Length: 259
Image 1 (cartoon, rainbow, N blue to C red):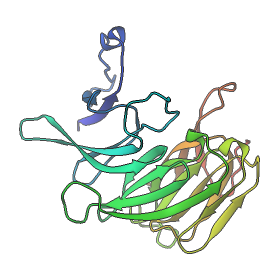
Image 2: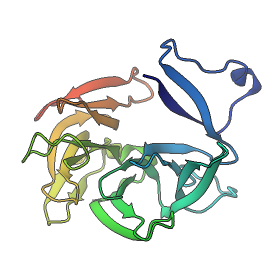
Image 3: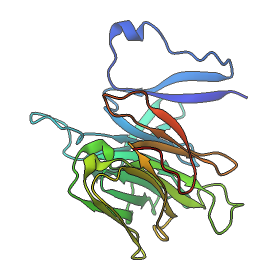
């Protein structure tokens, strides 16, 4: 079986381009799929069940005063046409500090902003999202772009652990929020309050934002999460600048990872 990885490039020097990326595993092919000016500053990537590639293009992360790009982040959709060329369309725009994207069931695309998780869907099949729902909303004084909500993935439902795909629960991470207190709100009125200085956490809820609960705490910034076929949850915990390295963690219920 051959596996292809999508490789997005925003800006590379000539010396870097001289060394074409390759995998030591002959089953894996690394190909350049899109690059500037088709896309700049990608912060999240997902592939939907139809093989369409969805990428968050960031324009709000530490935005310079003289920046000429759009004033909000966009979700770009890439497809391959009959001639093998990459087509790009704007699937959704209007995000602020967009951090992550993942594809769910029934056409729903889940997006993480710094203070919100939402889901969007294209209901008339024109390649653009036209239905929007908040899933989780966070209230906080924290404003630092990339230590809020992120790390989207799906896990088996706690009700039916046989379900292992996007019909299960939504998993997401929250960074240490620069030490600010926070309150997370689910769509059914459930809320979780985090005290100042408590550190980051990994959480779960239903795919429509209900039954919100914390799985584990003590993270610096669990910016990426994934779930294996046995339902085990893993997180990449981004480190503070003065204390490397980053960590790959097995997330267990009620775990505390030492923040």
